[in-house]
Figure 1 (cartoon, helix red, strand yellow):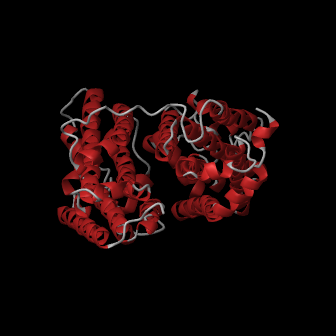
Figure 2 (spheres, helix red, strand yellow):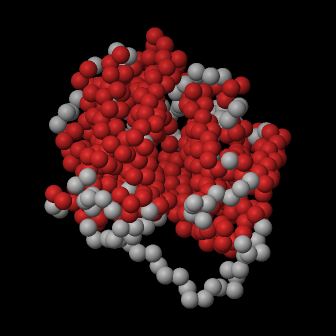
Figure 3 (tube, rainbow, N blue to C red):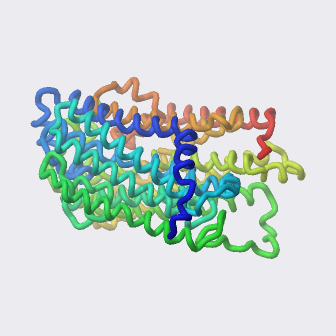
Length: 535
């Protein structure tokens, strides 16, 4: 790499900062807000007896399997112990989006060609995107540290934790840069980044299941707090290791960027068939072709996830009882007749169903991508109606979401039965548990379809509603809100604390009806509005 490869980086940093100023502020603010939400949660749970509550959590085999042991029995340790996964996800997703938006998306839309018409080096865009992302992560880390200090945390431990989170964000910024080099499509690059986040979370949970200090903590960014040990050992030297490890994907990204053309990816797209299949003759077939790769990727990820957690669930059955907080969560006695392993698989399926809802949102969002890139105009010029085109994508999105839940239930039931030595043990309950999550998933599909049909520019509100449901779950678990408020979330009606034989069937049926109504309104809106064009 030469000096000329970086000419114009400073100017592009100013441009990217101007364009992403609101996203950066939202990203940083949300990360800091999570610290206070976690602190309020544990204050509400423990009050003056927080130390006793955390000690009880450490003895709970289910909570320890998910979060590992707490490193410090105080409010600072509680924030690290409970909040590191959410904070890592927030910083990781923000880093991915900003880097990919300013590199691969700019190339995909042709903005990079306009920028390259001026004296700009080939690495200037990548360097500028990484720079603002790294600085954003550093600011977020500093503000998180200051927030914990304001809550009474030790200064050194607070800054070590903030720096650890900054390196985690930097790692995923590098993953985003790497994904932008591999494929020529922005959505594929984001998919690579999201897959890396998912793998990181699974590896972190496996590390926690092994006691929190296995070899996985060295290669799993979501477990790096176990390496730096804020508020415990305060190993500041370990930050150097984390920083070096986080730099690896960035170095690979720079190396690969030399070996590709502008707008292309290192992994070239496969050429199409010379002639279309006889079955490839309808909008429904086209929709399936467009969703196929994403669906297969999600399917593989979900199968691996549920296979691992279903296989280890029975081993928790004889490890002792649950903590009083967890067993009486929400004032219910949901765990009295359940084995601990059954509760573990129930929670695992519930968490993954929330991400299946995110898949449904991304699948419907494909409609907007097809429209803004001008491909819909070619179809509507033929004998294809608007309703038929949009409904084809919605049908595929709904069927794929259903298939993900169905396969999760089948694989989870089989692996749980094999691990417990009795395949019939719990298989149908686990399958029903998984499939019952379909109504809330379809609600998010309907909401996204509604937003797309009426005004595609505000489709981001769908993600806001999904995130609000996640926040309601966290607030309810922390006893900040009651069950009445929690019922605003569609997932409350298939919650893991509700026995599978006691599911409220009428609310689930009403959710299905509501999703149908939202979808119909979205179809009506799309039929009566103008189509977006590149021009």
